[in-house]
Image (cartoon, rainbow, N blue to C red; front, side):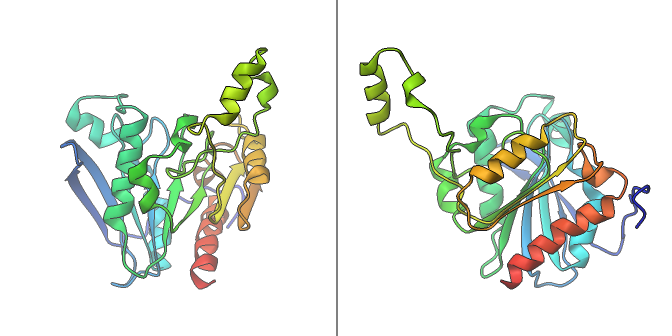
Amino acid sequence: MSSSFTDTTVDTSIPVVDEWIKSSDGVEIYTRTWKAVSDKPIATVVFVHGFGEHIKRYNHVFDKFGKENIEVYAYDQRGFGETAIRNKNPGKTGGRNIVLADIAEALSSRRKEGIPQFLMAGLICSSPLLQTTPKAKSITDNISLFALPIASKLMPNVTWNADINTNYISRDPVEVKKYIEDPLIHSMDINIPIYIAHGAEDMITDPNASKLLIEKTKSRDKTFHEWDSRYHEMHNDYGNTEVIKGFIQWILKHVKS
């Protein structure tokens, strides 16, 4: 596919299922599932879209997943897309804990016994999304993560190890000691397979931040792909077919391994 062409064609033979669900706290949420080509997908993906957008923008992306027998489930987050329209709350996400609870419920509800599950994240702007919630932790132990460019990598069951120099917590050595010994202050390393792709010419989020995260994570299975000349939305940029194939190939590799 030419690098000067953006492929937005959609394979209409891939079944798409739209459904309204109710969250555990009773909020109606719009969902869309791009089905796999068979009744027994080789993998499932839960996709969390980026800030200020909606899932219908990905029809030309996830039909390609379906053709490779990968099922993708996504939902318009609270405050965005169809969910915002129905609930009349544009821009109101409910806060970090609500966002994480919705992700945990999506992962739990879409888990299929014996089939690998992947979490895919779009642009998530808030670093607290990396923090642990008990509900998410037990659900996400066996998933893999891959991502479009994101300011903070979405992972409900880990916190980022920031390698803080505790000498700069305070000038008071007593307070520094209290910080070090506080059992509630902790971090966990990402130790699951992770793939991050970023456009080299992205002026919205910094590719160097993605590079740094990959370098620091202790996962033994980590991949960073910086796509030459691409802007922020690589899947909607020239040569997007290559980018989409890159995601799919990474999944297929981990399904087979």
